Image 1 (tube, rainbow, N blue to C red):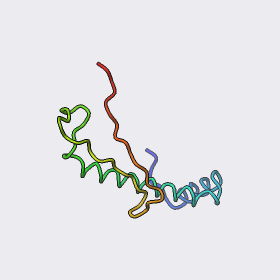
Image 2: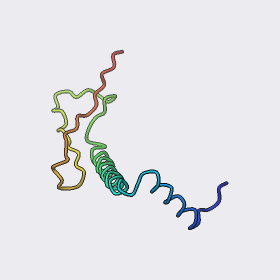
Image 3: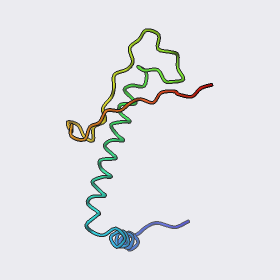
Image 4: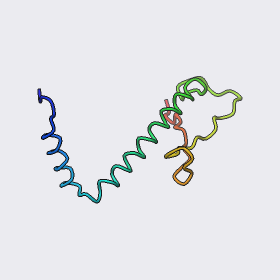
Length: 95
């Protein structure tokens, strides 16, 4: 439909992005995008590891078991300055 992007089109797109956001904000935007990607990757990995060990809100009740331990999201491994505790969502709907 649009064809393939060649070198002139990519250069034009980069020039437009630099004009829109400015050269000073681009490194900050790239840094925050990288942090977001690391957080998303670590969350996806944590969800895979927790996949079979916890029950969901729609699953059977937790009879006599302790609630799962609170997880912590970290921007990168070993980075405790930007870590924060995460509370798991609970089913609060009334039927």
